[in-house]
Length: 219
Image (cartoon, rainbow, N blue to C red; front, side, top):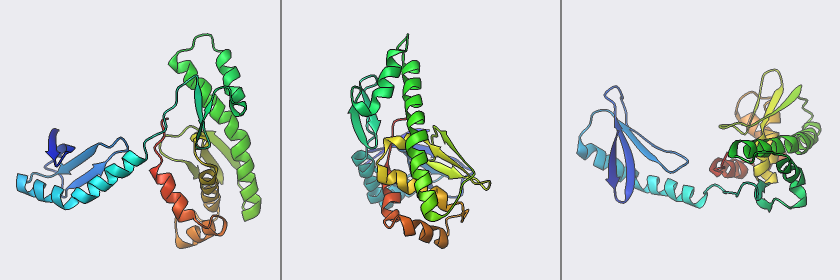
């Protein structure tokens, strides 16, 4: 892998003879990667020129949607807001931290993870049951896990899994995820019928979906 500097943009360049096409990707931490088969420098320059506006647009969006950082032991991210550890909403977490004998990063992270999981079992369950009745769709089981790549999932056995990290985002986005997964009880795909069903309960579902895609949380 080598580095390319193009109009102020640092790019990781990977040349693979086995590739048939060229690819440009941008990670959530704003790393730009270019992969190509064996091509000339002129080809690369022309490709980057043609994609320059798109690359800069993506980097700007990432800059405007930086993850919310919090100070462990002092703050907690809840429903899109940063609360001080002494806030009544997070008293469970404060008490849990008090009981920890050795306050190292691992033990502190466990306290935070348990806090989100416990809250998920009450808040997310209440939203799931609310929309389940409203949509007349019954699930067989709900599970709460800390996931890295997905906000939720729904299996063919009607088991819904929700990411405990949902507690970090706005309540309107949480409701979108809940309705989205419940809709999969009827449609195990992302067809027009599926999206129509979601819009029956979340009329701005497209806007919320786009907002969700841009969220970059510190897990």
